[in-house]
Image (cartoon, rainbow, N blue to C red; front, side, top):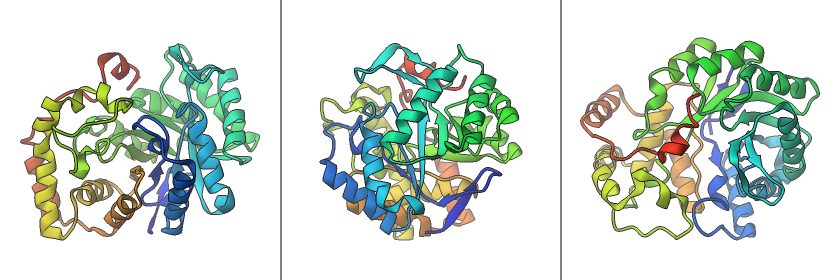
Length: 331
């Protein structure tokens, strides 16, 4: 697996990371713990060294799983986790939503270190911007944690360009994480140009459109009752039917390259910038292998032009989140 560098601080990671959330959170029935641990270790064996989790996934249980899976190979991997939601001791998220007060950040990091079975977080993200706490205070707290040796690199998730600049002025950012794929291209307008100017890496989450761009889902697909995609407007049956046009485009390009739609979607992201590192997740070994093979798919200028021109004619149906959730992004 080739590597890429996030930010000016030299955070070198595999060109494709692994998004761990879906192993036991949000996508229906959790994997059996032993199977999830085995899958994470299989990713390491295949050259993946960049794993993404968060305090709020579970809450807490995803970090525990990742910590157990990676403990035997801790010196070979980089772990990213996140703070910023008001997770109460009972394991639920407080209605207040976000909380990035300095004391809350410190408490979150201490918990993450324990669950991840490590003494340092390689990349610590603010999960969502907290409008009640100046980003300078957030960055300043993380800077102290860096000085204390508990954190190596700082990142933001779903932050807007102005917030990125203000945080970066206090503590240089290694990466910004946002949803980005062929069906979610909002970061292109302001965020990506800002990151290029500042020398900050970019980590797209949901690079396969929460599984939709892999091509196996259509309007008839039944999701488990507790799969959070049931509450996303883009995943109504009507919108899935309309959005198949984008999957059909990927399939046409894939056929000509001996690849799969998922591989073309990931290869497209990798071709955008050398400082972009997608983090697809999966619960299946064959999908892991499929995703990782995307790093070897070299799209030509003609391929990229074909994708761009065809995608421009396809209207994406449905917002990515309900309105109240979308308001938390881009602050």
